[in-house]
Image (cartoon, rainbow, N blue to C red; front, side, top):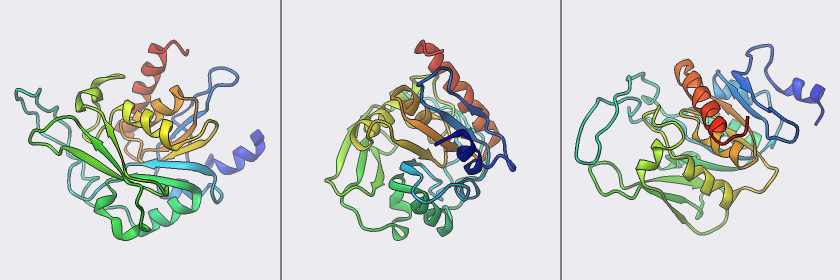
Length: 235
């Protein structure tokens, strides 16, 4: 795809990317947009993305937390912003299926009625049996057996620490890319949040487009992304 074709796809008239990061020839592109993802997806043609790896709001009010301490390390405080009060509208799933060939959707147990049947779910085993959930579920559109990825919640502290209340470790996305994506594919994340998916895509050589509607989290994840790449010596 040439630069003129790409310019026709990206919503340049409505929004400027927070960052289109490609520092040297042959490196993967990494684009982060501070905008509503449904509106953003409308600018892309059918099946433009090979794989969408997304973590939309679950509608359970878990968009913030109060600080706590315990023998397990406690929990960081996050401002309650209200973005997890509602699930994505049905239009979100229509657009997601339109622009992507395959999908992996975290928290899909909260909106399974919107999704086709699938045997290929993923279970993230958090490696801790405490008051929080033992793990999380992700729907996949792949026709394969259910798989388990084991990653202790402490891995969230890697690559810059915790910056988001529903953050997942970069390691989990590394595992997903290794097992569900092929080299050279284009990845979409509609709710970037902490930016773990973006970091994993860049470090594993995948082109990436992400949306994050919250300006504070968009800026924080951009800073985390740059620091992670710098630590890997890729600047």
